[in-house]
Length: 112
Length: 111
Image 1 (tube, one colour):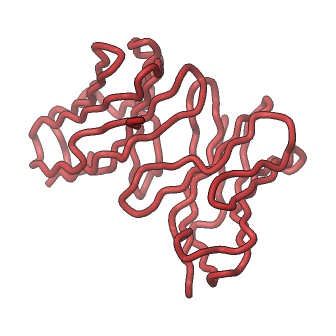
Image 2 (image 1 turned 90 degrees about the vertical axis):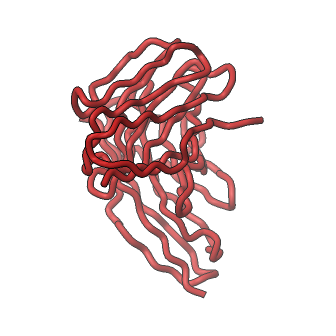
């Protein structure tokens, strides 16, 4: 079975550029989570969706960050404009309701 | 507020030695608790989980964890560590639909 798929796996960009991270959850899962991992702050929940609807976005750092889930099989996390402090590993996870959460391999973002 | 504390940032053990990684949680209700492992450059893999029932739970790769309500702890153990266990380990508590993670413990294994 395919797990959670994230793309790209690595992204290097310059400050001010727009960055779009993509996630395909496990088929049949109806909850999707975006996490960010940094040395300073560890693993933080940014936002999560249930049945494609954003439920809690209190972890989104600021207006430069936005996330969408247009359908059950696709979500994006966008940063516009990007800043060096956004450099981190971004993980997507999915679950069936409040069941076990399965994590993707992550996207390593470096903003120069 | 709900939180998870992993007091050990870095632990070094010799291969074959026993291991215990500490985890303390703060949560008002009966917690759902998890341990995840992250190998370098990889995602998070679920090692084991506690929802209810038997307080000693078995996981993959020979790991186990014991839930102690009186101590608000969920420590991870392994009787004999292998070099391939070198990784970062995260304890987490589920709050509603969300996972709250600890800061992680990096395990280094010497031959």
